[in-house]
Image 1: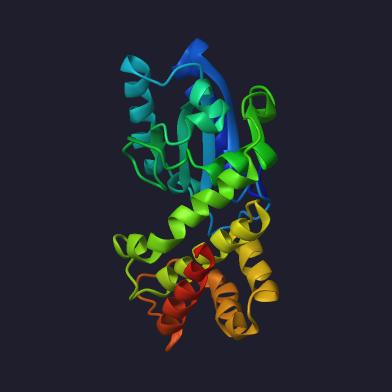
Image 2: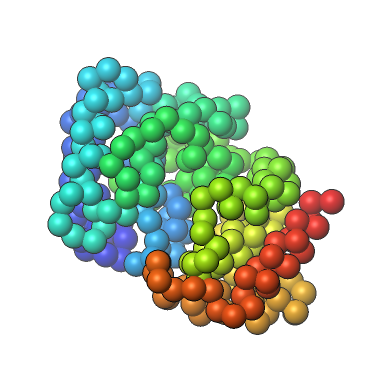
Length: 257
């Protein structure tokens, strides 16, 4: 068992088998990172994967992977629409020197692969190295070097000042989900700044509720409780919660000064 969900485990088995057949001798291993690796995956999580390869997929292999990812979300079932991950060459995966290298990336539930560095970040690398679940291949510690705490903290210092504006480019703050996501993202950034490690979404929220200024406890409690509501395009933010979100964002950004 890789996850708490039998359907997801079956999908992962079939997915890795298909990917291995496509990549042939360039396949090195397949791993889970993200929420499931941190032991916090649930029905509101995506399933984050990394496939390690000797070289980045090109030519016929890339075309076959694109066909596979175009087809998977059309299958019946819940989890077929919730895969997210990248195909990473072992050279750029090994050390922090390879951070930012674009990998072939499947966004959450999307059918079209793109070249993007979304999964090639310090926090993703840290989760993979410290908590990655091996689906196939050697132990992930054979492929990924430790991520220095200073690299994690620096990435958060660089992200925080522009985080709200970045969220505005794609998140609709007329939705309750977006309000919760923003607060959670700020909590995860603050957790990393304080500890040099990475926490799950719920773990970061609970840490923040117990550690940060008590005035934020009502907001953080609301976000924790409302997570079970999931994505609902007809669900507006609670009254006053957007104002609290903006205030919390300004508070979080003050830690980078």
